[in-house]
Length: 334
Image 1 (cartoon, rainbow, N blue to C red):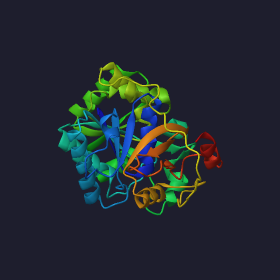
Image 2 (image 1 turned 180 degrees about the vertical axis):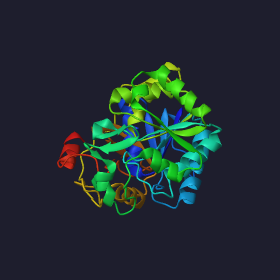
Image 3 (image 1 turned 135 degrees about the horizontal axis):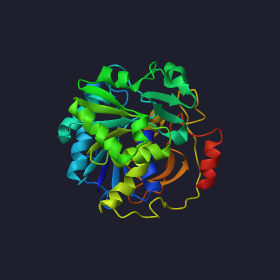
Image 4 (image 1 turned 45 degrees about the vertical axis):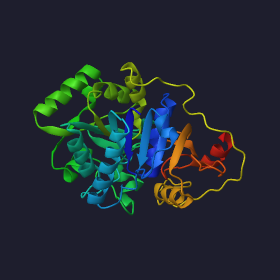
């Protein structure tokens, strides 16, 4: 394993894993920090995503769980790390993104990271530090009424600073557009000014690729799944991974299907992060192989079954992702 990803919820974990397999990295998702020996699929993977349920837990618990995941990933050999957060930056003034990011930085001995939840393929963009959902500021979107993490401020520098002890700054789009060298120079300037957490603008996939190249020297990224788009190619250039065009291949199954929905998001057509987590835990699933995307941010996954158990495939969908025909589309592709 080269890349270790710590995700703050289950659908967010499959979201970032989908981006990695799309680019050719063999990726496995584990549910929580493994307590027993890891399955063989983990040893054969380029990237492992640890799916936590830490997005809405008290900040101290989120920090403890995330540090436990980091220690497990380090012991398994990971060299690059990624703290996967929601593309709508779901959090409160008490945390959890800032406290977890700072704890991971301290554990890794790094003095700077970038924070970028942008996922343009699903309408999440960041400009001048403000997060947009489609054409609306985050604070004008349905997320302002979220029952657990109401997002009433679209200014991510302000949101993250309220949660963080260290200084938060901004990497503006004009610098991002100049490319990797300009990004590195600006990050170094911000470091000299004492800025440890850098919110980065991105309005399209090219911006995300520029950011990935310009921030490649940082051992930890704090991001939505979009920033993972450029990561596999960078790791391949270093000679750390060998990309595989069949990384997303799963078994073909023909079996009954069920749909469960519980999200409170305005855009919900089915499913939801909390619902997905509850279902996976009730099924006793501990490890998932990651398959091809059904839609941006949502892949088919296949549970690594215990001997004697039939194979099981799962589509774990965020409430905010997918269209009204998502599950018909998913079952047609299964």
